[in-house]
Length: 467
Image (cartoon, rainbow, N blue to C red; front, side, top):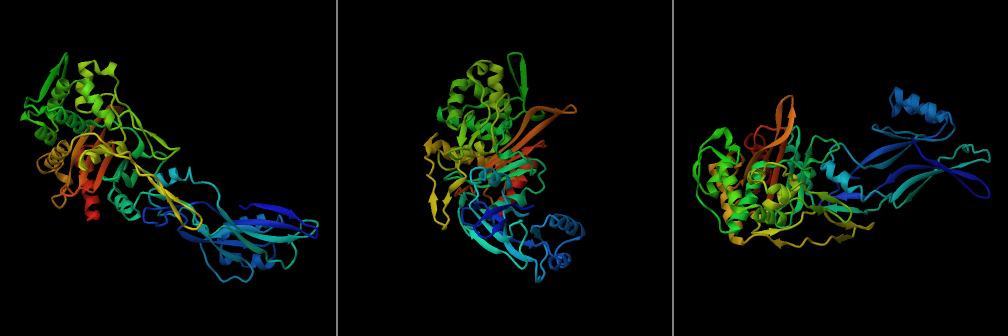
């Protein structure tokens, strides 16, 4: 409705209405406004016959009736309107729309506004009233603006253009998330969560399955392990038999072929040879089971990594080898793993804020994240080649565009069932372009079919738009 208050002076009382309140503006990395970017019309309607006669120029029947009832209290009424008309008595003012209908990155912006939510300006209209509190005849009000043109706000790392392209590429996704990073800085360039409900799935932990084979591969290459394994389609550990998809026998495999074929048996054997301590040490370097500070007050948990007691079981270590068991992580966190491989071996915590803007538009930049080397350049180079091979000769073929896509697919069992059917989390985690990596892109589909069918086409559509 409206807010009002009396201000008493020696000769008269005043009645003040707030026409609009201004909150900090959220900008993209190129200083494109993401909020407060469009204007609306706000009408100030005084309780007199002349204003009543103009209501039908701006409002439909139900709105008019509501306004008329409110005006019976004897004070002006504030209403936004989608219509414009030349009015002699109703006053129309341009006001800001904080969130318009095509606002991108809804989840990320709403999260950012938790830290930039203090009122910074307002536009008011003041009316004089007599000693009885009645509006004086003929007073059309005096408009005042208090910091209403302030440019203050926050600059996010996202690109408005890329964000919209990602949302378009993922428009058929019913439930899931996409994260795009600048892989040299791990600044979030785009973050999409479907559907537009309360949950930001890009920051929500999920079972990850075979994309974790990249982490096991890092561990193996860093420890000089890349043995040949003959996959017969299944492998028995203790009293449990594990199998590759459809029990396919892949034959002799090294890491390169095993990643391309997503051979579970190979990575179970590899995990047992490496041991829990070495895999855990590698995983912790990437933040598994830890958290990220996206700002001073915004801490995001990365999910669960099984502890040493759990991994004493060879069965649990076998599950970890191909990313199953109690292991979970977020799309954002796994994107940092891919970045480290693609950028030559440096792990960098992700960031979503580039800085703050003062009321005059001057920016104070946030501190850059400090990289930490988590693998050798040789290991990173080798794994980049292997991830390209996954696309050219393996399960990631549908992600290829311009002969430049690289990544890893995953179809992860969630342990959650719907009418007896297990829900699968499907992934494609990759980078682009292969020869000169710039972007890390992770696609997750919740309740999917396979990483190849669900996620690879979305990855391809995104890089098509990047080009």
